[in-house]
Length: 400
Ligand code: LCS
Image (tube, rainbow, N blue to C red; front, side, top):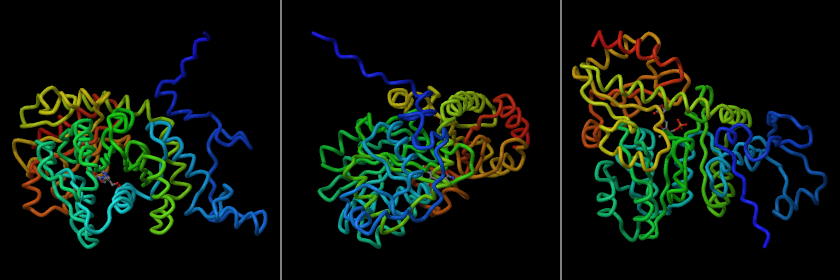
């Protein structure tokens, strides 16, 4: 009997450069996907237009409902993430709100990890209840037990980030997926902090992966974007209704910037992973630092879970200074190379104070309950020479 040829799958460093095929535009053979900066696509005839609208024929007609540059980005994300289909969005927040609104109806419940990114939090606290969707928070420590206690017949969706923004807690994706599937609910994972380069939630049983593509996927801090990857039926609904009618579409130019970011993702992530670990080790041994959270440190309380589900540990670190909030303020004002800024996954090292910046939508009580202390500082380690990053932190820590 003739042996079946094994399917050849290239390595991820090759995949991020080429995607499924080297040339996406076979007509012109352009190596870089062209930017189809057009709102409208013309019909060959009235009949062809009607057939496209009736979905009897494939074709572009209006960028909110389909654009070749945006589709090239979506196709590449599907290939890299390993799902069935993808939908790009104007931002990470559009991707998250679009996912929740596509799945949940009034009367449904969702369970979300606590803490969670500040605007995801305010979306769930301020907006969802107005639409009759109840949000139940499950604290990130002891997450599975907390979810188990909160699951009801009305639970439709569980939303997690892992690593969690900003505390860098780790949630067991596989165990969560098994638990929520028993309850016939869906699991959506915001994979922004890890990226597909380091973690593949769909392979671990998640139903949906969501991104702020503004971060590691863009990599250069020059665009805002989002993307959701999941089953074909779900993405069809997202495109046919949520994107079409709510309209949070990404621009072709921003989709092109994300395609460009993807091409260098492997070398960037290797540098982020390497530098992240080095900086975490430096901070862990510094006398002015009382606590460091980085999933690649054996001191991380969920290190075993991180090791099991992550290929590498990315470059997001949370730490506390012995001098508390005031010491953190001095640190951020004393850095000369690192930049005091929100966002993450940038080529440059960014340092910020979650309680007063990214998570300022939390009340004082919510900050306390969710473990975001006044003294917590978050750093997104960039791809500069790591010795320069550490030297800068070292000189800045002298002021704390
Ligand atoms: N999900 C996570 C985990 C995030 O960190 C962010 C933004 C978003 C979603 C929203 O994405 P966007 O709409 O901004 O593309 N996080 C930010 C942060 O930590 N600092 O600035 C933005």
